[in-house]
Length: 147
Image (cartoon, rainbow, N blue to C red):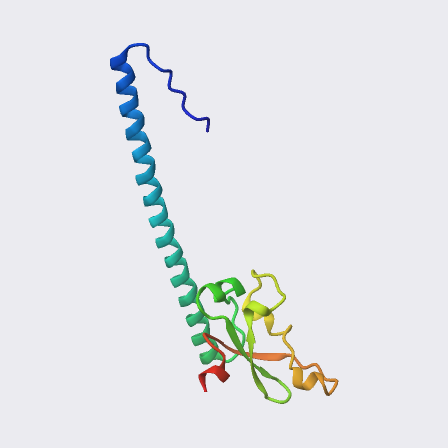
């Protein structure tokens, strides 16, 4: 949108009226910018809450059903919701491990349930076996930090 052009009036009374209106318009831009920032902050807080609730819902469904549930939150949603860790268990040796979602080299739009076939047990990898991992739940902190 092109900026407005205000031709300067020739008479003094009209010139002062134009300056007054321009001053009001400048003051209004400050007010509208502050309202936009407040609305943006509220929107981001609502999105963060929605992402957190999505992660909690997925954890509950995982606990109840015990298998990777589709649909699941994305990596980005889990990180935004405050769940940056995922607990996995090796399907062969039953070793539990925490994986940092932020450190994964996957697009942030990857769904959590898609990680089940991509995550491998590092302990079994040393024995030349590569079983896939079983997803347990999303976590706010690693288990080792909770102990």
